[in-house]
Length: 314
Image (cartoon, rainbow, N blue to C red):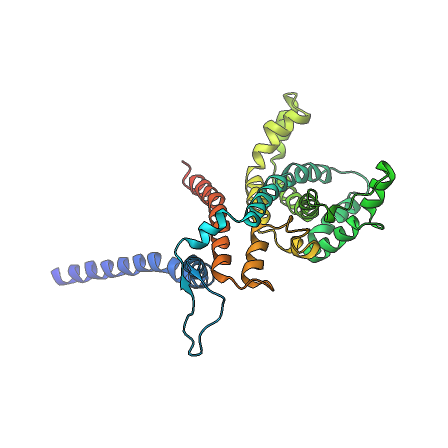
């Protein structure tokens, strides 16, 4: 009898251990491929970039494959502090960041309009979705023609109104704002789609209850609709901030950083220094990348902290 009891107890303990192993190991097994790819393509390049930023290296190896870089410590970062092109790029990045956030209220306004039942709403939706489905290259070309001197629509309009056309992409004071306007076009469409998805999940009973209480217009939007759109707003802020800091393609297509480098942003300046025709300063380019990464980490850390707080309900 005692042996049978011991056997049952041992069997139960074994099953419990198997269940514990399954519960504890299974998540890690499913996560392993993703963690491996994240480590290989994200963490390892970050470590390499930080390491490379302490060297002066032209990107070439020796005849036997040896690394030919020279350790300069914080030299690249010290040079950044007195580099006027870096200062211009950094300031332009902050312009991008501040003005790109206009995509949120504009996207919300358009989403609320498209959420109404009016005649021809499908046509309006197609027109507003259009910039989201075309590539950044096409957006850049469209706006380059829009701003083009002599025949561009914007140039002709300003010429008709003021008597003198404005060549936006040739003006060092206006070029960055012209490119940001081009970037806002697809970004507003993206934010609008996020808010349209959120509006479909707004509780209709709360809307009806608010109407019975006399709420309408801005009060309805502020106190009833916007709180329910908080998840969509959170995602919209994330993609807008990251999109602003990653701005590269429109600058490359529309101006190549010109005129006189006035439209450079950090990512484009990094490309010029590391891989441009007169660049091949890999260490200096890596130092610019590290600075851009540090700026991104300020926002990413905030987003992760908020997600953690929401998950743990603290």
